[in-house]
Image 1: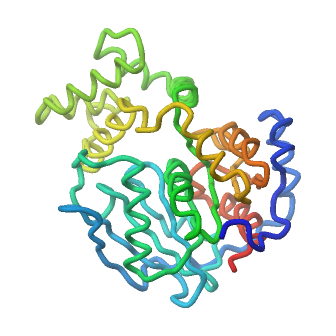
Image 2 (image 1 turned 120 degrees about the vertical axis):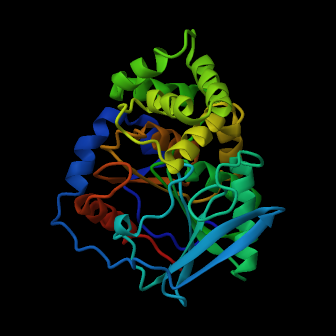
Length: 336
């Protein structure tokens, strides 16, 4: 179903993205967003419905629904491994027209088996989306994904294309050997003190070895020793408390990093080949420092009928100005 009724919504076409340089985009994004700041929509703080959906033996994902029960169904695929939908950061979506289905991925939020690393991969998360769609008796839906959720959404669309009314990829984090290495390099440049803290713990020669050393040590350590390892991995001070959520996130982040996010080299090319004739809406902030726009440029260039819409602001779009910029983008999308 992808590609029906998209209209004129993109700032850059696939061919544009094949030619443009990332450093050219900030000025273009500022020009596109020069209009007065738009008011934000009143995204509800509480869901109108919530349930737990069993996706495997001993595994259930928590599902919340926001907006208009009669609106166009949109599944929100969160990124960040444990970061679920934050209503205060979603004021760019017109919920009067949309039925937002937000599932907490395995081990995240209110889903079961928090901290359990078994059967935890983007492939499992993609399959869980389809279980949830069937459970809610939704014939097809728009798939809107943020950050690492974009990888999950691409895997889902490749397998269940006929169930996707549209595919929206926002702030795409698309792991793969070269892209992951570039992401880690930028992470070191942004936070050199964190990297120094990490390297002070283990005498290793590569980031892969460093992640593996931390993963093994944290799984075997207990109490204060384990907390000290978590603090050093994130560059935290001795006074900062290591919460259970922080520990769970650290274990999960290391699990994915040591496994190259369970995505083999070439996975993105294979996905783009499957989606070659589909119109895919790609959104990215030209100012994003967490996941720079390079990944979305690459993705748009690989998909001949894709388009890239540019916003301003940071990756998690918590500031009202960031959401206002995103409203300019999302108001142009059709939700038929």
